[in-house]
Image (cartoon, rainbow, N blue to C red; front, side, top):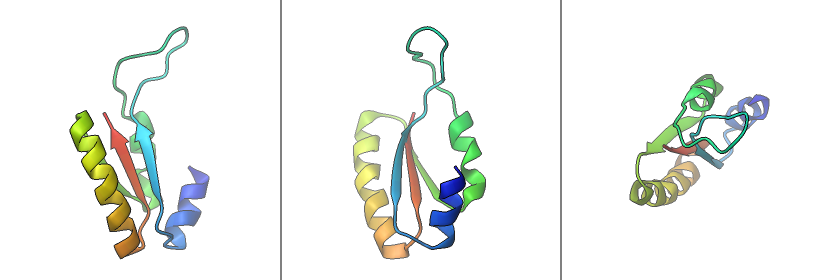
Length: 79
């Protein structure tokens, strides 16, 4: 997260694809958790989220095009 402040401050067109999943102690957790996404809100990156696989693919392309056109970094997350 500290590097996101630098990327947003320099207005670099970057996209970070994040899967919003909870961390578990033993096995892979299948439950959704938005704590990692909420921690990124204050960095200056634009947030774009999808709720199903089709939206994840479509918004992934849209986030790349929007980042290039606006010179704002995007965090694209899938729930």
